[in-house]
Image 1: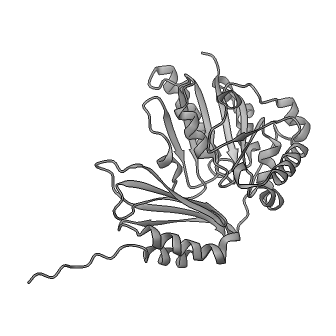
Image 2 (image 1 turned 90 degrees about the horizontal axis):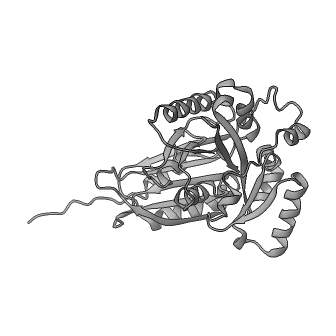
Image 3 (image 1 turned 135 degrees about the vertical axis):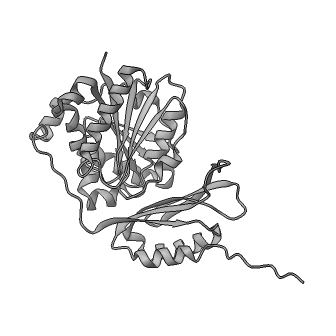
Length: 331
């Protein structure tokens, strides 16, 4: 059996990885794709936002970051996928790994060179990095992971370019080129990018990586800042979208710089469709994302990732957005 190519899709929190991944899954390219999807917190949202199709196999890895605490799970899952492919239980010819936005890609990429079982079945095709044009300058200043994601990239795709001016975009491109002069830089508009910049490009060059990180094949340990944490809000009662927007708008004014990423699927009163609400720092918005399934529990779930966020205030405020059910008096 020929080696299965693997694309590592990375990028800092809110850069648009899941939107791009949906584009890959929906595009008419002929690939049958298995997805390994990793989220930082105890519960994930992204799997609920991905296209569900019989031709794709989607595996979730939650409650830890793929580059450190759940790295062993990656080796196990890759082994299980390879076995299922050999036995005919699954039919796929490409794997996409969507990392959490806080992941350092080096330990993930290292897996394909230091684990013998993985080496026997897989080829690291490329590391594709999404960059948020609005927030990247500050993220690159503040977070080592954001710099590593650019440094290891074989392809860099800039998202949200419509929200910044030409001068700011030019400066960002210059900065990205200084960090990584070998990576091709393109743009991703609302999750759309050329498939030939994403899949089967044979872009990963081990020698180039060893030039910038000589100990790449040695110990590439990684730890996250202790003050970055996540929590999940859940609510079974329907929510009032206007109240949610007002409440989170008020929270953004106070805690916006600390709100690194927040996203969720909401059950809104009077809506037969799921509402996806998401934001990065001060930038947030909501959109419809398909109807609830007939037997699906209509439950709201939001994940927050940030620094020193007051969990209790957020949970109480969002709970107060649930519509009250008033009893109807009968004469």
